[in-house]
Length: 125
Image 1 (cartoon, rainbow, N blue to C red):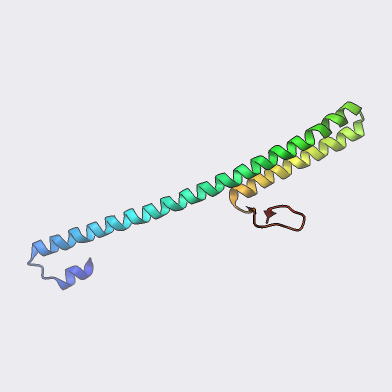
Image 2: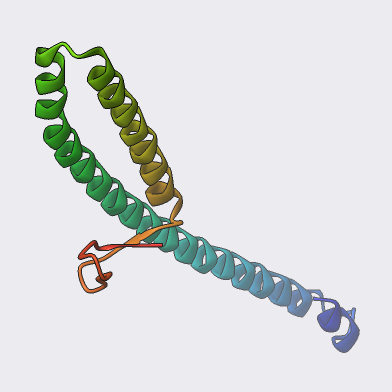
């Protein structure tokens, strides 16, 4: 805008008004385009976060379903040492699932079908 004021004569007020409105329209258009790009990026981020959260929720469900019968069997035996070991193991699993959830939501871990590790897991750090 400063270039316009230097290059145009000051006695022609209509030209200065047209240039001012042109600059205003250009600024508004640029702002709208930038906001649209930002909104699109937020949509993509939200979709990927929801996808990672769904994967972790599914993992959580399967792990808990696999561990639950073991806990019942240990409790049925009534062995205090075995029960303590089982409770410690369940607590470690709870901590691991919380950390995996935090990693998935923050994006520190990626999950994919096309990336496989040696042990067959699709979790890649």
